[in-house]
Length: 154
Image (tube, rainbow, N blue to C red; front, side, top):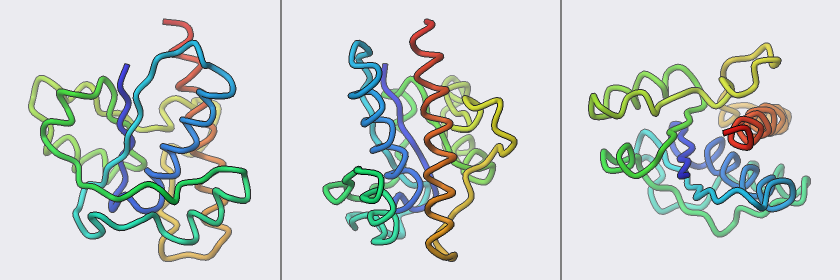
């Protein structure tokens, strides 16, 4: 199984989701063989490390994402990854527009895997304060836990 996590620029939400999902797999589902990566719809930050505020929020939860670098979503990703999980509806629309027709069913919202969560989107914390990064982490963790639960049941 291959999972790609996608947000707008690949410096806040999607790299956060990548490290959260990796950590949950390591701790709670080591039996699952899942390849995880992240990308951004746009190339605004290609090659850059994650946002320092996202890194700080992750570190407060024992997660390190300093080694990650932003990259842009590519058409080949839709063929390579079994799931392309996006953070919000705008990313969903943009990913679907890029996806080859036969692969569009792979594009889903991350929070589709957190049905008890009232939010359907992980809001972009980039222009907000530190609290927005904590909220994003909480929502991402809910989606990641739901995804793992579904994958275990397959």
